[in-house]
Amino acid sequence: MTIEKLEIEITNCRKCDLYQTRTRCVIGGGNLDSDIMMIGEAPGEQEDRRGEVFVGPSGVLLDKMLAAIQLDRTKVYITNILKCRPPRNRTPHSKEITACMDYLREQFKLMRPKVIILLGSVACKAILSPDFSVMRHHGEITERKGVYFLPTFHPSALLRDESKKPLAYKDLLNLKALLEQKIPTTDR
Picture 1 (cartoon, rainbow, N blue to C red):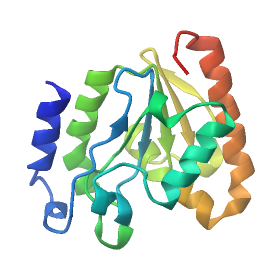
Picture 2 (cartoon, one colour; picture 1 turned 60 degrees about the horizontal axis):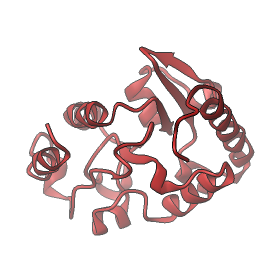
Picture 3 (cartoon, helix red, strand yellow; picture 1 turned 30 degrees about the horizontal axis):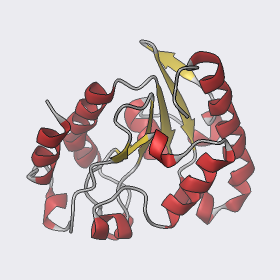
Picture 4 (cartoon, rainbow, N blue to C red; picture 1 turned 180 degrees about the horizontal axis):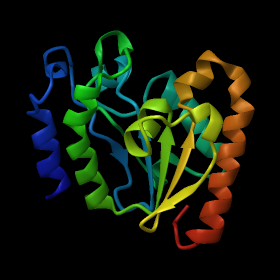
């Protein structure tokens, strides 16, 4: 499958009820040739309106987080578990997550990233384990089949609770060290 075919499939998706309330699908954005994929939860209000990933307040903070470790948004690929905004930004339902997982798998197949940064509880639970705790295991890098996973806080959680920002910064330093040690060819 190509990214263009995947985008058409997602745009026409009716696998769950979110298609009824979305303005636009938000598939992802950035560099599909990158070794780094970032996965968040779901589009927010501004993302739904514009059809672009992480463009609201969480996106502004994400850009600052990446800049703190000399990583530019154009050098990574960013997507979400869900491709449609849940009403009032509520937590995604399990049926919605299941409906979108095949799309995320296709994005992974198209990219073949070496590092996946999981932003927040929803992404961590969907990818790593249903009982995963970001608070307990943030920053802990795990490797599965040659892919490194780094769980950390979602930028929106950091906006709500700034006391977690130092923890997220340590997670980003772990990411930077991983990239320097294990992925030296990454164009950053």
